[in-house]
Image 1 (spheres, one colour):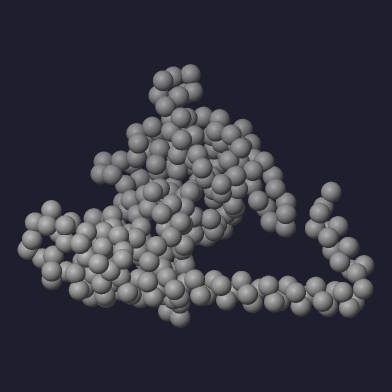
Image 2: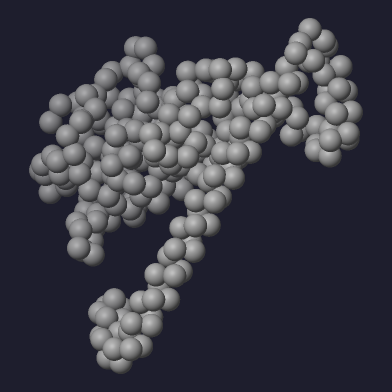
Length: 290
């Protein structure tokens, strides 16, 4: 049964005055939710600016003294001002990471919250930190989404593959690109994917990864390839498939992109992990031409 159609029919049968009242309630709820969201983002930005200023005050006092003395100083200061040593330590690290000032948000948007900045502090590579900072600001990521992106190593996947590995050209055109869900990993280079065709239409298709060939499933190498794909795609609610043609077995030859920390189809296609290339990088497949 199509629940959406049932809901539409029920709404049309309501008296006009009740329909008007319901619309008013919906609008008021929307305005309240919007205000709470904006207030939360603004508060997060204020906290980030405040902690940066605190770090700026702490930096000269902590310069040139031993790590143990820094810990003791932050412990004493924390007791005096009513915060934990961890808060002061993060404020110090925040200032040291961004001595020029709190990173600005995208044009016309509030900057990152303090919680999001905290996720960036453990990153020692400035290039990685800048990459995640730009991605989070551009796409308005929450701290949770930023954490997932860092955990799944989005920065590393965006860089060139390891030296010596064979390369597949990563597609740039979004033509024939679909969101989907992996139903089953058949072997290292073949999957069953439930594809979203749009307008609430889904279709289950068997796809063969373009440009790669993994060993037969009955071999140890074949089993390793399959387990790698299963483990790699575990936790990915949405994947993106770009189809090209069908092979002799009526399977779509396709590229598959994934990222557990990203939900939008366009973002996964542009910045997600390229499974075909990952199999080559891990030496679990050889490059082939169809």
